[in-house]
Amino acid sequence: MMLPTLQFGDAEHALAKQIRVWIEQHDPGEPPAEYAARMQALIAWQRQLHAAGFVGLSWPVEYGGRGLGLAAEAVLTEELGRSSMPELINRLALYTWGPTLLRFGTEAQRHRLLAPMLDAGEIWCQGFSEPDAGSDLAGIRTSARRDGDALVVSGQKVWTSRAELSAWNALLVRTDPDQPPHRGLSLLIVDMRSPGITVGPLRQMLDEPHFSEVFFDDVRVPATNVLGSVDHGWEVAMAAMGFERGLFVLERSTRLLRRFDHLVQELADRGRRDDQVASRLGVVRAHLDVLQARVYSTLAGQVQGTLRPGATSVDKLLLTVADQELFAAAFDLLGDDAASADHGWSQDLMLSRSVSIYSGTSEIQKNVIARQMLALPRNGA
Image (cartoon, rainbow, N blue to C red; front, top):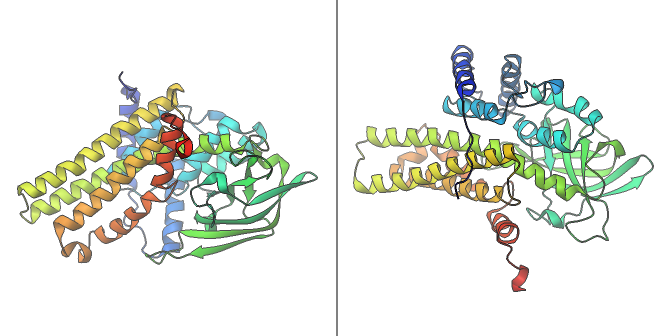
């Protein structure tokens, strides 16, 4: 049986050309090295793209989009990646929570929250991981109790990307502790400016506060900010993960292909054309081609509504392998010079190590595949 794949027609090819020409005329140049300045430059970049009509291409017109298909979003994603243009700083909102709001949100939530996502006027973060739960979302302890017309949240989240910049947090909490682990959860849309929220940056090896831990001390969240329904947040969270691993994986795979071309060129410039190099590069390229074919199939499944539960965990695993294999190969083949060369290989290698952790560890992804796609029993039962 042949898997579906995303189709590109004349309209998408014309859009790609339009974006390419616009990029040539609006290249922002190298981003600032300093973190805060770089974040502001990324916000300005997304604002420019939005003003040009290239953000929210598949979203309904009434919410600020252009009403085009998902293939149009894929075109933008690929053109940005191929041209080395900066990422969309609010891509978590655009790729994950915008589509989730379109599926589960109320009309009031959609009209209030969707439009500011597009121009990065309101950045979003995601509160899933916890110190004692990690990638095991069923084990979260951050709680929310009903108090009149609000839910009162207490607990802690960790590894929250760009929490310090965010206006909103898609927060998974436990609202019924007596339910089994995957039940009794709710998804709240939390205003990060609310009293009782403390954000503590977690500096990583690159000495940047990309991640934070976030503390919630009796934070009041209006009941109207529940996404979906109370105690049914697991369904919402799983749908959000499915959306996230579509366009995000396509963006990442496109950028990895560009870095692969850089590696091939650098090795050629050094006269490295032996069989060992060819064999290693062939393995890396195979991983990248499989990854891209897979994500096209995933996006087609999203369009057709045929994506199987747990299927995007395959995409995440393939991304992990391709990403880490590429930069490990770069260090092995370039040798000691890779660490000192001004081509970003050291930073890419360090970043690649996190791929097997963020958005669910590889171990969690394998469990999801085993249970949801292969129907294998738990604990040998």
